[in-house]
Length: 509
Image (cartoon, rainbow, N blue to C red; front, side):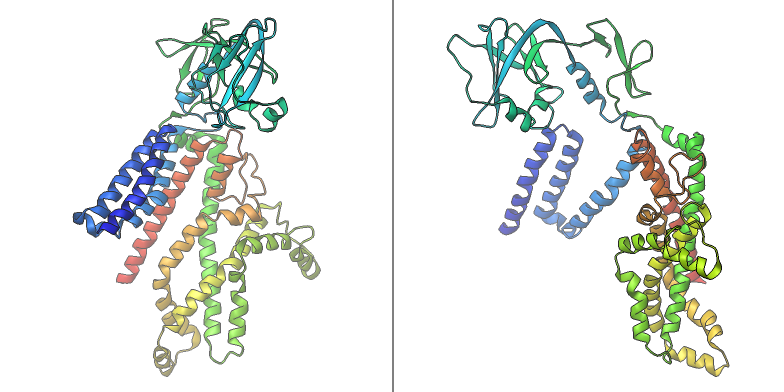
C-alpha cells in the first residue's frame, strides 16, 4: 500500500506543477479540467472504495482525451467565427489595441541592453541631446524571437547618478540582432520617473511615446490622436469605428448556427458541398463493393486445392498490402500520368486512345477508384481467406452429393456464410473510405477543379474539402471547416448506425 501511495505522489506532484504552469499561462479552463482529472485519478488509486475503477481509469482517460475532447472541441468551434482574420480571443485583441502607442515630442534616447547573470536583462538609456539624463531599468525578461505579453506593465526606469553604471554585460548591436532580442524589445514599454513612456524606434534608439487608445467605461476605446471612438462588434469579430471600418486584430466570437446556415445557403459552398457529398458516398460505397468483390473472388480461387503454386500467387497478391500506401499512391500517380504514364502508353498502343486522367472529371474519378481497388483488395482477400478456411468442407461435400456446382455453392453457401460476419468490416471500410484523405490528397489533390466551385475539386471528398476550407482558402475559416467536419461526423455515424441495424436484422433472419 505504501508503494502505491509513493507512485501516486510521484505522478500527482509533477502533474500539479504542470497544471499550475498551464494556469499561469492563462488557460484557466484547461487547468481546471486537468485539476479535476488529477483529483479523480488520485481518488481512484488511493481510495479502496474506488478500487474497481483502477483498471478502467487509464482507458477512460485516453478515451476522453483522444475521442471525446476532439469531437466536443470540433463541435464547439463550429458555433464560432474562428479564422485567420478572427484568430485571437477578445481579451487578447483588446490587449493588443491597448498596447499600441505613438511617438510624442522629439526626445530620443540611445540605449544599451545589459545581460544579467540570472538570464534577465537591464536597459540603459541616455538622452541624445542631454547626456546627463541617464536612466536604467529594473531587471526584466526577454524571450529571443518572441513577443512581450500584451498586458505586460511598463518597465520602470530610475535615474542614474553621475558616475553610476548599469549592471550586467553590455550587448553589442550585432548580438541583439543575432539573438533576435530586438523582436520582443519592440513591444516593451518603459516608464520614466515622471510616468512618460519610452519605446523602441528602429534598432538603435528609443523615443518618447504615449498610449494610442484610452479605454472608456462602456467598453469602447478613444483614439488620443484624432478622437476616433471604436467599439467591439461581436457579429463581425472586430473593433469598428463609427463608419463601420474595422480596426485592429479580429477576435473569435460566438455565431450560433451561422456556419451551418452558410453551408446550406452560400452558393459558393452549397453547390460544391452537395456534389462532393454525393461523390463521397458513391466513392465509399463503390470502394467497399469493388474491394470486397475482388478480394472474395481471389480468395475463392486461391482456396481451390487443385490450383498449383497457390502460396506463390497468394504472396504476390498480398504485396500491394505490404507496400506503404503512400509509396503505392505516388507510383500509381506517375503510372496514370496522362502524357507520359505507362497506363496511357499501353492504352494508346493497344486501343488507340487514352483517357485524360488529370483533366477529365469522370476519368479522374475512375482513376481514384482503380487505385483504391489496388490498395484495398489484399485486405479483403486476407479476411475472406480466413473466413473460407473456417467453413467445414462437409457442407460442400453434401452439396456435391445433391448435384450442385461451384457457382451454386458460392451463392447459396459461401457468400451467405461469409457476408454476415463481414458486415462490421465492410462498415468500417465504408467509414474509412468516407474519410480517405491521403488517397485524394496524394493522387489528384482534388483535381480537376470544379467549375464555379472555388477551391473545390471534382475528386475531393468531404474531408479534403474541409481541409481546403480550413487551411488553403483565403481566410482559413476554421469555424466553417469545423461545421463541415461536424456534419461529416454525424453523416458517418448515421450511416454506420443504419448498417448496424440492417446487419442485426439480417442475423435475426
